[in-house]
Image (cartoon, rainbow, N blue to C red; front, side, top):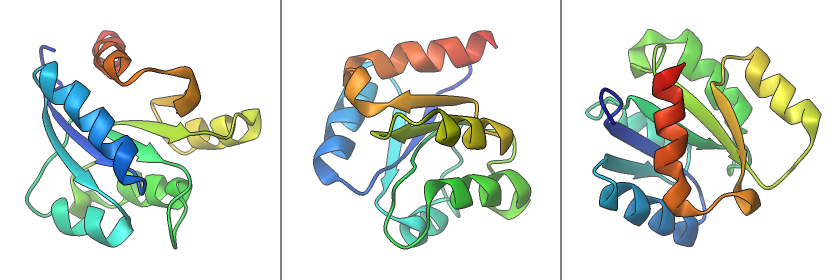
Length: 127
């Protein structure tokens, strides 16, 4: 956990946010969370994440659209952050689209335990 310490969770399901937050805090990360795009953009005014876990399916705006905005608009402070997409949809086309638009990783939520998120962050530091 050398350099990537601040984590933003963008997930509309409260239970998943809570599980991920608890696991990351236990691993020593500073965590902030957002349930939708408006909440995210408001929190990014004062919280500057090193890593963003971004759900693909969010109310109103897709995570892929938010990914493009975070990568292209320096006002959000995330152009250099590591961004990992979260989904329960295991379609290769979604993963490819996310990667093409600047995602650093792609996780299928059903395939990972909350405690494994710290290992995901560690692997991002190695890249």
